[in-house]
Amino acid sequence: MTWDWGAVSAFMPHFWDGLLVTLQALALGSLISFALGLVWTLLMRAPTRWVRWPVGVVTEFVRDTPLLVQLFFLFYVLPEWGLTFSALATGVCALGLHYSTYTMQVYRAGIEAVPAGQWEAATALNLPRLRTWRVVILPQAVRRVVPALGNYVIAMLKDTPMLMAITVLEMLGRARLFSQARFQFTEPLTVVGVAFVVISYLASLLLRALERRLVR
Amino acid sequence: MSVETRTQPAETGTGPTELIRLEGVTKRFGDQTVLDGLDFSVDAGKHVTLIGPSGSGKTTILRLLMTLTRPDEGTVTVDGERLFPAPEKQLREVRKKIGMVFQQFNLFPNMTVLRNITEAPVTVLGLGRDEAEARARELLDLVGLGDKCDARPTRLSGGQQQRVAIARALAMRPKVLLLDEVTSALDPELVAGVLDLLRDIARSTDITMLCVTHEMGFARDISDQVLMFDSGRVIESGPPEKIFGDPEHERTREFLGAVR
Image (tube, rainbow over all chains, first blue to last red; front, side, top):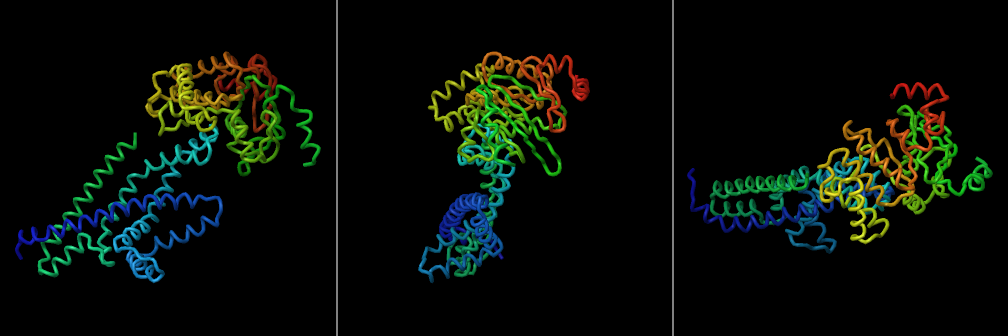
């Protein structure tokens, strides 16, 4: 087995296409999981159990079933109900939904870690409840949870190849197509592996910078 | 409880200058009774100090008045309005009249010092941002921290944080200021600065003060009335000269002997 640089340069155009898809899925999936996770957390604190209970059941269900099952479900079952999205959009939604059930637990921990004295000071100043959430509690909770959210971004990155199962051609999907056409596996798979390491590392650097900015 | 006893205080108890009244207030945590059928009232403009051993229920009274906790029995009346039960809207009105300074300061660490002070005047009292900031700067000058507007609370010493917290409470122009062991969490060398500031405020304003403290010198200086607590009851009350000079109750003598 020899290393063929020619295969690497032949693969690169496909690689860039795949990289773009991976980054899109990661960025949008993360955003959805951050936003939706926060929504779940707040709904779980609703005063009535008619909200808490269904939200608890749905999120527990999503957390306890494999991402692959959810991808297939969204991709093959929703169109039967007349809902059709592109493969990438479906993949992004599945990633965001799946990971939102993890980020919700992160947010919950962050909110519970805000000292009771902060709530009491807000009450003593007569701040309305919504305002207390917005300017006192959430800003303090979010900066506590940035490192934990970051870990889920990296976990999500490593789950993006699953989108292959619903025909999305991200990095690994491109590598597989290329390999099967040319019977050259080593070079494209190595390139993709290195790319995962580089993206993870850059993401963790970015997170550390963000953390330093937030925790003052 | 019969109807007569419930309506009675409103007819006879609320004098023109009475601001705070507690009647038969009982509060339990589990099987521990923290307040045990407590009665007392505070007239407008008075400075009342609550002393006594820890666990005797002093802080719970301040927390009741600030609506941070609820009594199990009895009534609490502030400026003629009864709390517990009361709709949230009425509680909000009552809270406008009351400010509280906490043992642990409880400043908002995610906001600058100035924003800590302007947040509630802008969102609750509806002041314009410029006006609120001008007032906040005046208050920061008053507490000796005029140069710390843009600092984060976490960068300040405990004494400075507590003075910001006092400014924050005063910015709401409360009728009543509740001070909950405000120097207990401070390093010893920072206590005097905070107490001097409170002496100034007591002298120069007509704000009503309820003060839980272990600083007996301070209590003697500012108080019109001192209440001695033990096991959820007021066992002795009177002007500071009387309580500190010639206490009647054996428990008071023991307590004062121990803290000196």
